[in-house]
Every structure is written in structure tokens, then in C-alpha cells.
Image (tube, rainbow, N blue to C red; front, side, top):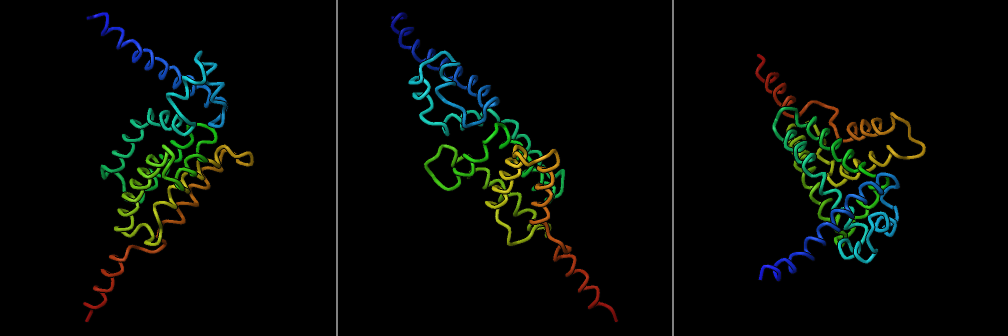
Length: 211
């Protein structure tokens, strides 16, 4: 009976080892060649057949999504820190957008499949992107509520802007200052240029109280 159980468990253990080997190899390969690198080449480097790779990861987006999941802990820690109230709402939003840009820069070319995932619900990256947009809305609404962000700004656009910032970092025409410059332009775009409305109201009240 024990041997039967062992035989039943063996394929699952082998499958897990193959999956881990694929992910480790893909992490290295995509770091070297970008996310457009050959999946067949990844399978060959991992020492498995292409069919085994595709059984675990039917397409490129599924493999990318699995690799990004491994980076969730650091991103969640960053999000929770920004939620803690240790910085202003504007700085929290700015910090979150910086975190997205850094996350999207894990591999060369990554912003493109993420951008594409925002236009379809069929990509395994779609749920990931929607989660980021939802969190961006949270930080944006907090900044809008305290008057530091414009009311007409949308979280979806800020998420795409963060992807653009990440993409610029690897663009042929970019230099070391390009990504930071674009991030500054993005913040200048969503930040208000006048004091929050409550300050104007307080001033108005003071004027009304004068004899």
C-alpha cells in the first residue's frame, strides 16, 4: 500500500520539480533576453521538453504571471508601508506609482504585455493589472480627498503612466535621467497646483468674520 501511495505521489513531485526548474530558468533567461525570449530555448536550457513547459505554462503570459507572483511579497510590503500614514497622501500615491514602475521593470519588455493585458480579460496578467489599478485608485482617492490630486485624474491612466515610466528606462533614446524625468512629469500632471479647497474655505470664513 505504501508503494502505491509513493507511486501516486511521484508524478506530482516530479511535476513540481519541473515547474520550479522552468521558473528558475525563465527568470534567468528573461533577465538576459527580455520577455520576448524563446520559450523553447527556456525548455532546452531547463533540460525538459517543450511539451512539459507548455503543460505547466500554456502561453508566455502564464509564465510571466507566475514569475511576477514571486515578487508579490516585496510589493505588498511597500503598499502596506505607504498605507500606514507615515507619509502624505500625495507622497503615498507617488511612492506607489514608483513601486509599479520598478515592478514592471523586472524584465526588459515587460511593460508591453502588461499594457496589452489591460485591454483584454483573457490574459492571465489581466487580474494582476486590475489589482494594481484598484490599489492605485485607493491611493489616488486619498490624495483627491485631501486636495493634493486633481479630481479628473483616473487610476487607470496613472497605472499606464507607471508602465510608460518603466518602459522609458530601457528605451534606446533614454539616458539615466529619463525615467525620473517622466515620473516627475506624471506627478506634475496629477498634482493640484492650488491649495486644497478646505484652505480656501477657511480663508473665506476669516474674511467674512472681519468687521
